[in-house]
Image (cartoon, rainbow, N blue to C red):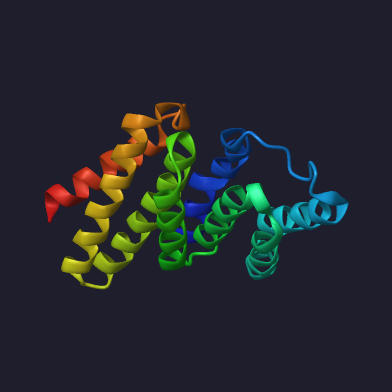
Length: 172
């Protein structure tokens, strides 16, 4: 299976549940222009137009006010789906550092997924030290999600990813 397809398939449902975590309605008090721009960015993300989604999310973050963390999380998820794992991990880690509760857990889920993919790529390229470090970081992020926000993994996908990381680390 193609790596991008695997990431897209495994993470496509993540954003669907993120709106609930932040408990806010896009466009409430933000005006129709913001709401239309938000849905345009979401459509671009869902249609696989990652460069367009990236530009639109970056523009939205500036004017998002209290919705900024939600928009930033979707932006990080877009970077993950686009295969820009380093960017996704960096953005999500920064967001996680500023959040608590399930909002932090959602950011850590994106961060851990991106770091897992970075670790796989590094190992495939023969860079065992970088790969192992990325996998260990991914495992820490996912462990926190599973411990503190188990509702974010109702189907066990993150637990499965964590188990795959553990198995890979045990072989190194």
